[in-house]
Length: 298
Image (cartoon, rainbow, N blue to C red; front, top):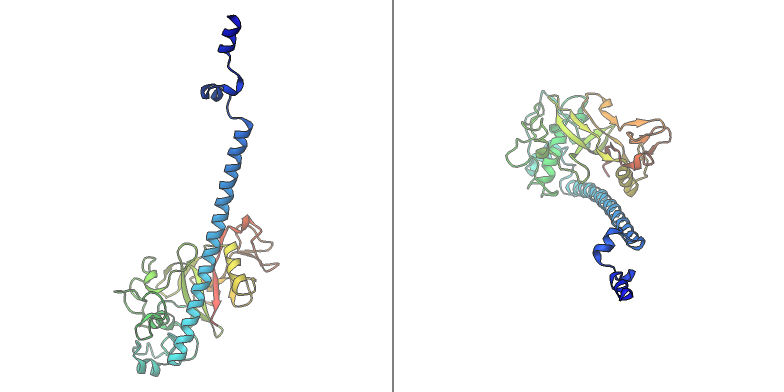
């Protein structure tokens, strides 16, 4: 009877109840399974994040390429580039024109092949003159709605006066009325400007346009994504080729073509290393939001 009592009171180890097993914690096999699952989930998250970033970079490249194509189509159809279309041609085709501003021709459809603002240095103004008319021409019914969106947005003043910033364009809330939203990073917009006879699409986080017409913007594109974009369509070097790490930022001189934050040797807050002329992708995993870009017209 004693033996029977013992056998009944002490069940074999493999028959322990769930309550008894819980007292001893997880087994090594169970812990291994949990760790494997955690590893798979972590890997999946990292891969997913990389795929999202890659998709954003590709979307940004596609957006710029669509604008390049739209400009070529416009030029073939009307005989000039948007915004800069010769005044006579613009009048003939029915695009918006207006009186000369202060007797100046820069910034108002002079047909010289470059996109000007309304005051010296002509190229740096935004939302006024030819750089403002550029987006209007491409998105207008007269131009054939060659790009997505309408600029300025419905109800917003036209970018016609050479000597006046359209009401609303001075604030962050008004910026989307006049410039396309970029496909990458936060608060980034696409704008156009000219330096040394070369037209560019600028890509940076625009916050406002001051009373003088100069754009105020910041760098918010992660270094790794910036390099990816540059490498996809150019040479992958920040200061050469058709894609360069520069942007407009609040100045009336050529220094407003501010280089991205740079340091000799590179660090986690720089866009590129000025010594080696390479993007700072080795620092901080290239995750620092330190860059902005410009794309030459093609």
